[in-house]
Image 1 (tube, one colour):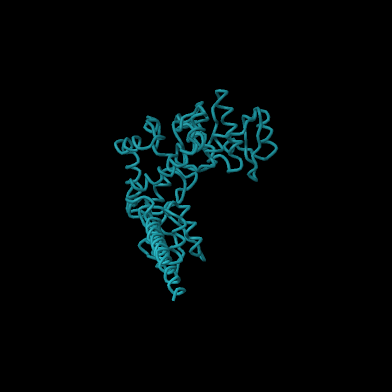
Image 2: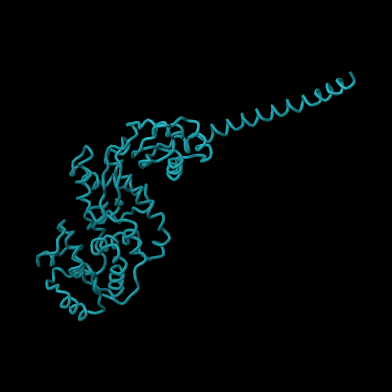
Length: 364
């Protein structure tokens, strides 16, 4: 009996410990449940800015978490991965989706699991690298419910342009210059854009392109400020470099133009003359080359009034980080190889050596 009483005493003493352990476990579970719920909440409630996410074929739940996290759509990666284990997502469907930071993680996963067509990107517009604004307007008109003329009219509306200048740090009154042909030329970043309900207006699409340009220019803002050129001037020169050279040659060609600018010479670029006539050609007529237009860099020294096409970040980098050399001339031979020379006699020799016999085919 004494032995049994001792056991009972030990059991009574142990009971509070077991109860305490149960309470602790419940507390952890409740706390964990709260953390789990918090971890799946939207990254930024109320932010409905569209984010395009491509889920490739064969993507498993773990890879999708990584893709969504990289897109800024995951609040807590640990709890997101826990959710993929508990959520029953057994039919994840590859596609290009449009989400936003105001959406909860489990909502996004449910959409991907169901392949919800309401969130699948249905249309896209490519703003082509090197395309003139007229060409961009024509491409957009094929997807949006507006004509090329309506789009160009909006892009020439000074009241609208003023609102954009107020919104974007890199847009200045330079775009409203008297001789500028198209104010937004060169400012619509060359990329593929997905059309959604929010950006299916001219204004919405325009600002999507400008937002993209802002990302690129923000990343290079210090470099631009150190260059002693304005954003407008950098984009103008970048656009000329874009039309004159392939990506691998752009830094070298930019170096030629920088040297000519430093020497007070004209850029001598035919592509700026082509822009006057909204053409892309090499067989310019003499009357075109003699045009009395400030975009004619054969006749006038310095930069033209504004950019002549849309550009990408790598071309901006090539212009900002141009090659330092002594060349003042360049041509591209029939194989596209750029040949440089430091003086006019060397330039003439390159023309003779590489078979470019027409002045109209020269790029000085």
